[in-house]
Length: 197
Ligand SMILES: O=C(O)[C@@H]1CCC=N1
Image 1 (cartoon, rainbow, N blue to C red):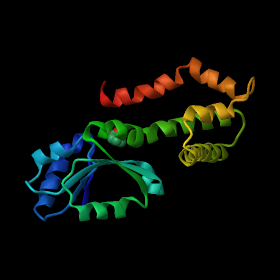
Image 2 (image 1 turned 120 degrees about the vertical axis):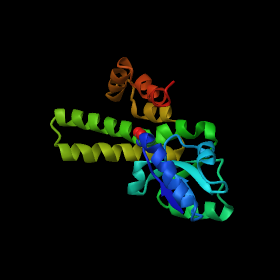
Image 3 (image 1 turned 180 degrees about the vertical axis):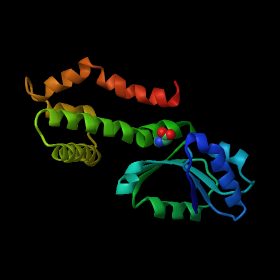
């Protein structure tokens, strides 16, 4: 099993790499952004077994996400091997081709946006006198824990937000500050921007 990795501008290099590998009957797992099943069917030698996936950087910490294309040419045994490789380090989700890169945006591009949120909140903590290293630790633990709480309880994020906001309390003032600056619209616009909508 072999993973082909290349940025968007390197897609042709990725294809050349795949063609060389196909001759050795290698199973190709592609992480080339935008290259789905049909792209590889056109580019690879007929009969090559291939699967397109979108992984993300938190895999390096064993807490990743892999979006995988429902349409592929791997055998059942190869899919079992694929799961044995990735299940220990990532949530693996198979989706139809029409959703692959939209889902990939919120899992694979969004670590950049999440890091920007962490950086900004950490900046705010530093502005208010918290040392940088402590600020980074605290904010990252908060983000990880909030995600874990959502997964564990299955609560909708709106209910989790409401649970923190006491009437007339502190948190709702921060919620208003975010709403006044269009926080949620800004976050939603990222997928449009990535997908070119
Ligand atoms: O920004 C990029 O080109 C790649 C695609 C998905 C994550 N990073």
